[in-house]
Image (cartoon, rainbow, N blue to C red):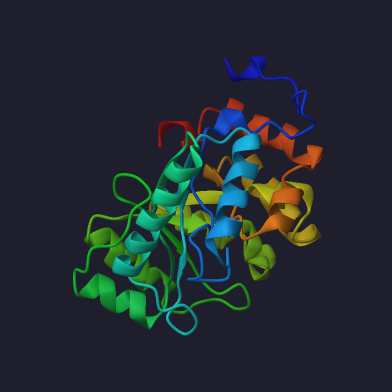
Length: 247
């Protein structure tokens, strides 16, 4: 039925991303990472995303202990404040929160200590690792997560450009049961040519399971207007593998 979705822009001139329904990767909680700095900005970003067609958000602040010492308690407290502000604004949108876990020693300790992790949906946990160099402990941490019955979701695998010359590593991650999440902006070359080419490669392999905006601010919101993202996004959705609509 998704093939009936043929227009890239509604009458408002905004890109129409309503077919996705849910954005499961963003940084909307104010003042706790490199995303929205304050509640006013959060509300403007949410309104902008709603204009693009989103009706549900699962926002995912960083837990990256060297930079953003967030905990589940901090995240949930901020989520409740955002929900109150959204209600006061009369916005008809659902907002939940998980986290984007950077796979460092701190997160490895959380898993080994059986500390409950915030999930996107069910047992799915969004994870990231260094964009600059390979992580030697990556597979060990992912294995520990799976032993705790978590389903790792690799955030923006196309942005790990050092894997251009080691694409087999993507196959290894899929073989051990990881899901992949595409940054929608990668389709339009927002992060550069290499991530765009890697995204195209992963699309051809059929490796993506989820699509997120990774929205941090207004520049990302503007980037989502790029009509170049629509055709490859719809190709992914028509494949039947994308799970956003089920979240």
